[in-house]
Image 1 (cartoon, one colour):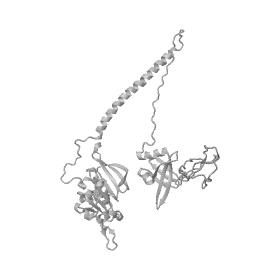
Image 2 (cartoon, helix red, strand yellow):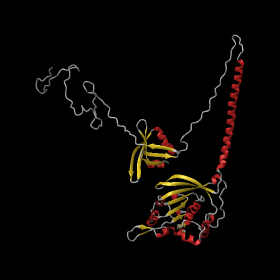
Image 3 (spheres, helix red, strand yellow):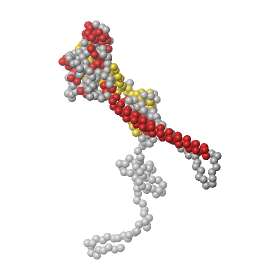
Image 4 (tube, one colour):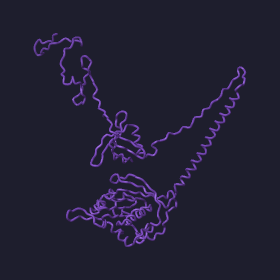
Length: 442
């Protein structure tokens, strides 16, 4: 398996490779080939509590000039197959600044190099590759990356001794899906084991001049919103406090009017009631814990009913498609299992159908019966029947309309027309004008 550490300089890539990859492999007795600056055998042996000779048996430091000539395979002389040397079986390979050796290019890699990285996993080997940007690496190796770890400094929140790692897993060649993140604290005992800085560099502190942390920005916003809150609370208390006082005064005056005697014509004031509307409580969003991709699926579920359209088993894998059908019997969306997984859902196939789940939300797609809408036939244009009771569809030969079964294949015949339907014109006789005495006669 190939793992890629990506991040800006000084973000913790090399530190993570030493602490979480090289040291655990050496502790387990696994051979390690590393192109990493300044690995120190004696200090690594002291850290792991083993002899320096044992570390030298397991750890092989590869010089920069030897990388391209070291990690290659050979072609078998008998059957012509590409093979990896026995020394690279079951090893861990660590290469820092990998873009210096396998730089991004349209030109293909040499066959002995590309086949080495293609066969490494088949021979029990793993590799940790590091650089600032994954797209600076040659696509022939980039397409074989299974996990990508993106490293981030936390100096923006004022944490110089911590770093954050975001984990991605491949879903296709060169495409990754986020699976989680974690924050780590630097262990000072790891730094002496390798050269995090070039030899002779003394300025190893994190540069902090001219920067601004997120807390300064949040402080300004906090003061602004606090001032708005104080003003709002002042008006709120005045409004409800004044309303309560007014109600109390009206109640007192109304109660004092009981039992009084009024003169004729005197205006009597009735009690005043003031209704105070209760503040509206915003509804709770049950999907507040979902991202926009997952909410899109649940919005579809609100617009139509989920249905399992097709399910097929190919070997040990399943291929399936689900649909959303609205109240007008129209399919508004169709997705397959791969697309649903890319949207962040856990998809599983059961005897009753397909189960979609994300966090604590679950959807179930079953193959309920559904009739696909049928295309409308051509409109009936003319009614040529004598009794005007049945209609015949007149359509061209290229049309897909179907006429009445009793009319298809019938013949149209000449019929006798009743006299008097149209004005009658008298007939005429034709005579040849070349003949003498020719004339028209009625």
